[in-house]
Image 1 (cartoon, helix red, strand yellow):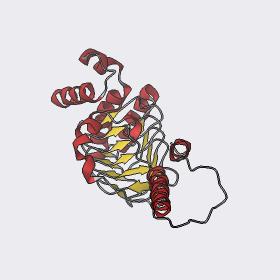
Image 2 (cartoon, rainbow, N blue to C red):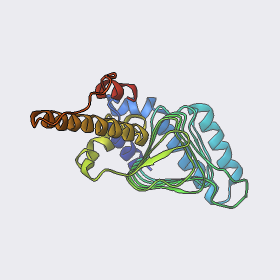
Image 3 (cartoon, rainbow, N blue to C red):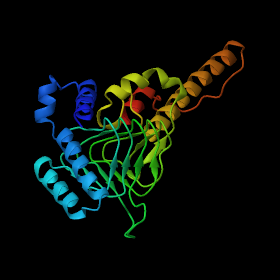
Image 4 (cartoon, rainbow, N blue to C red):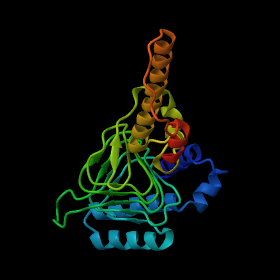
Length: 249
């Protein structure tokens, strides 16, 4: 037990820039306390002491503000940062090295007892603050769920889900060199360069329109130089790609 606690503390020290000492993490981090108490509750749950498991879970919620059902499965080095308002359902499964921020819910959409009602998180998944992951599907290894996203379907490994309902953007193969930094600290499920697929699509369309306008200007200039008259068109407001890009940031 003590070796796992030591491993949890080391993981938090690596991932949280606000952590100043191991003693501070051990005494002042409710996410760590919730994980430790969940292990006690889960052990009781698995040997048939259901009421005791639920009672330990209840005490943990009162102490930390984090509600974890004793039947949930949680891997190693899971970091619940801040943690207040986090809810993790009975059939949820959380892989190793995941990070979950405050207000997140791993919930279910089915009322059928005995079924897989809650999500499964792969290794290294990041769940942003206020995110709702609802259903018995899988969020793949290394995926990120942005703040306040509502996810109701599977997320592929390495992808990012943002929005309500969540839109999924696949992992960019050219961004692999940023993976190490992102895993260390990707606040609230999003990296600093932004991962919203809708925003990226709009930026792409604007940049493409600006490129086409420049090409047309070059064509007109070449025609004029060759003595080919180009019919005058009533002037309009000049296309400003930078201004439009700022509107969708």
